[in-house]
Length: 259
Ligand SMILES: NC(=O)c1ccc[n+]([C@@H]2O[C@H](COP(=O)([O-])OP(=O)(O)OC[C@H]3O[C@@H](n4cnc5c(N)ncnc54)[C@H](O)[C@@H]3O)[C@@H](O)[C@H]2O)c1
Image (cartoon, rainbow, N blue to C red):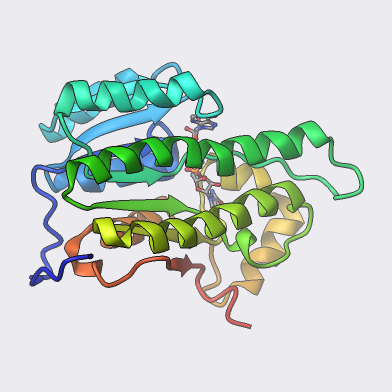
């Protein structure tokens, strides 16, 4: 059962521990900042070499406890190491945010299978690899938990050159629904946040020149999203204020997919 807890609108997360993948990236970094301001212990996970330095900066700036674990989520042993390091440092895991991801754009008739496999391996299989292990920990702890996955609008609409990315994010949306169904009895909420284009390294790489201008014009809000706006949606889905929401994929797209 997912318990009803009277809510205050304060979005309190004091004393929780969160594992954040893609923690050295843009949306992961903004999410970690919001959690840090709420007194959450941080386990930043990223394939980048500087993830431990990023964690040290968070400790300095926000006065929270933070560790960085370098991991390639395509690898089983790296995913296990994330869980081991998190438990060693903090004893329990209460929140998992799956934000690590990659995008490679190409026409469906031309794309190299290797690029399709890579996107599936990181965005879908990599997310499940870690989520399964963290889910086992949350079930064992018996205190429920919150799992939030960053999907994409591309997971449920067609966008030019996005075939591999769309396959991976559609798989993630399916995973969210099944986990929400199976893990509700353990008090675990599983949700997604589906952004439109976000002004990050990834967003800028995928959307340039005329294609970018056309895309902005097609978004009713008439702009791309910012990383902190995605982090805010993740924060909401991490707090008791959203306990009755599970299996959802919250779209943050300035209205792009309304029609
Ligand atoms: N930026 C956008 O326009 C946009 C739109 C919709 C969805 N998203 C999704 O948001 C998430 C975050 O994207 P972002 O814009 O912050 O990009 P980003 O590139 O800043 O962050 C992604 C992070 O994931 C890490 N990563 C990649 N492969 C990994 C692996 N195998 N193991 C561990 N870490 C790995 C990268 O090192 C990087 O730090 C991604 O899942 C992306 O698909 C982004």
